[in-house]
Length: 221
Image (tube, rainbow, N blue to C red; front, side):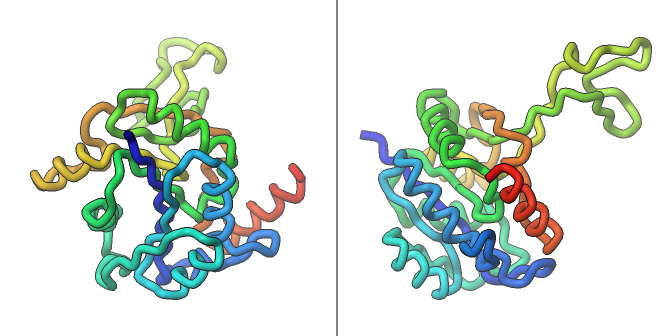
């Protein structure tokens, strides 16, 4: 039987917004919001907080989820997701891992559930959340989804898929197999995309980002 794990990464060190995972949004720390969101989604066999700092272990215990203490060297600014996801997967049995970022607090519970179920049923090795931007996009001064030869109505354009990283899914076996070969596992195998609400991709990296999220929730709630 397939086992589905939610893994919430939470590094203590952050440069632009100090201790950002502990910052509060409407009175609730970002890390706590992510844990509760995963619990409410009801689609995970286990939920783990992944951090180098014991502070997050206490929060995980208070919220009745598991805590994985990664090595300290995987908690600094030089550590990549390729490294800490691999280390986590080597320690825990599962078929699918869903990385749910606490710094994307506007990602809804329903989107977490729909994303997870869609991934499991997709046959993909990798599942990426994205925002579909249906607007003219250029790269290095060259059109990507339109032509300089004519004006195309926006509704007729092919949407660009902007990856959000708010939630990402991988098959454990494919991920570890790829890392064993020293190749990039983040995009290894069959890749699928799942569109989310444009505001769901809003990521908290600065105080302004947090202020925007606070203002948005006041409007929608």
